[in-house]
Amino acid sequence: MSCEGCTTQEDVLRLVREKDVSFIQFWFTDVLGVLKTFAITQSELETGMSEGMGFDGSSIEGFARIHESDMVAMPDPTTFQMLPWRSGERPVARMFCDIVNPDHTPYEGDPRYVLKRLLKKIGDKGYTFYVGPELEYFYFKSNKEPEGLDTGGYFDHDSIRHGFIRHAQGIVIAKIDLMLARCHFMMAVFHFYPHVLERKNSIPS
Image 1 (tube, helix red, strand yellow):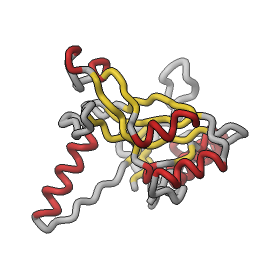
Image 2 (cartoon, one colour):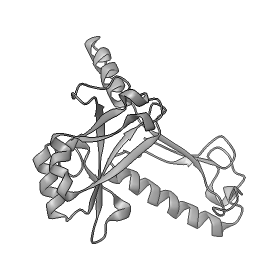
Image 3 (cartoon, one colour):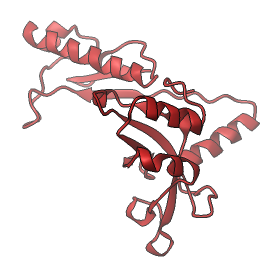
Image 4 (cartoon, one colour):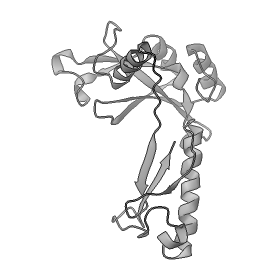
């Protein structure tokens, strides 16, 4: 179940009306795992959920050739989520989509469908598959040049990593904000720590 409590199309439509959601983003990935998205309005949502939204699959890396480009994005209501960075008067939400052919059969190249097939194959053998995302990233002094904030390494304290305590306070706040954002998307956070590679940070699930 999504953390918004939606399990059906009706749940999504009700919540979108109640929260006066301005746009609903449909999310999916190409074969390389790069996130793709397009947005629809409230007025398009009911049709978009029951019939899906068509798009040109030939424009997506690895999806289809130009003569077989018609694809349909079918949103999964259980993934409905309000986006925390657009939580004002006209909020925005998102749903992950299954990619299907025009006849609504699953598209073989959809990474989500590939994962579902693999999970079923594993389940048929009596196994349970667990996966958890881990964010690995760097902090830079600005968005102009890739100049790192520290020279620390594995499990170094923030005040050591950043040389000056003034840097450490800001980095700790940024880490907390990032963890809270992950929790908003129901991504469990157990801890965060400096990574082995110099200047690298990690937040596993």
